[in-house]
Image (tube, rainbow, N blue to C red):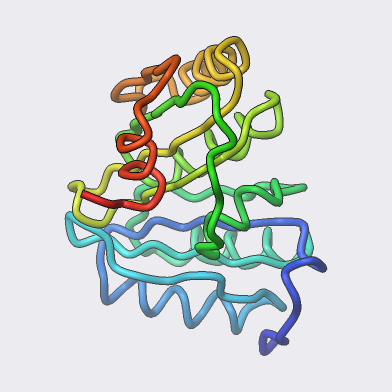
Length: 192
């Protein structure tokens, strides 16, 4: 079934597929949007020759699309379906501009992209924090990291939640209580 254009506000589920190869990943992206009524949010190469696919739609359609990728015989690094996806995660994925409202910063570094996105979504849903940025695999050897902000206690709680979710896929998690403004700008906007 061909994907229909929808506004993101109508979509409550995000599908993530991280393919080990670029050619196979492109094929999967095309096949996934043809398999179910989903919107392709993003599809792109990432480091280590991987291909990252984000699709959104209603739960059943996204689950069907991701299941197709899992059953395709293509080699995957990871695949997930996130129901009731955080609006903060969707804004960051769509590269909406967010601003730090002060307080602490947390930086969570993950071994791959797909588990990092899942951890970012769960962390935002479970804590009183703001998701400020998600960097997905490009230029960092296929890893990912996300930046969160809020009061110190909330950011520390969120970092612990992320550590628990990521397990062996966690590289490091740090909390910076009073970050310098130039560090904040560098992390959120990618300024050097």
